[in-house]
Image 1 (cartoon, rainbow, N blue to C red):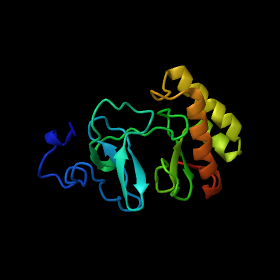
Image 2 (cartoon, rainbow, N blue to C red):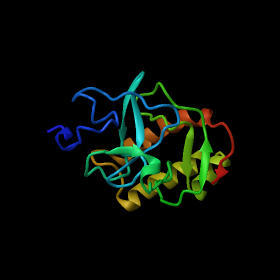
Image 3 (cartoon, one colour):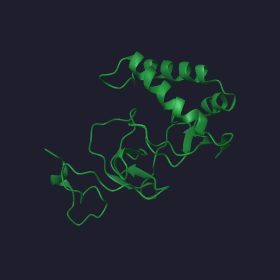
Length: 173
């Protein structure tokens, strides 16, 4: 079952009108979406140039279909893009990460809690890595089907792309 059977036929969100098996069009630059079901902000995964789709972030529940709506349409819950806590107080400015499979386009803005923002600002990536992995393990948030070593390797890859693309100091919201 594709999950499209229960979507409204008059919706023009891009996902509902995209034929099964096809990818929806890329969002306009800077567009943010949240899930209308859970209220969590979504990531846009660029699968290939000009095509991709809105997905729950890896640490969010994936027990329902993604229903992307403009973030302003719901009371969106943001999480730290590093450790996944709900205490987002900072933005880490960065250039868009593209060209690497599995890296989402966040329009350059990475949400951060205070401890993670401090570690990024002081270039303490090893300490940030430990904080994130320990947090995932302590809360049972390691994605299903992944080992801690796999998650650790994915973070290393992601941050290797992020570090040279940071364009300034974290900014308090």
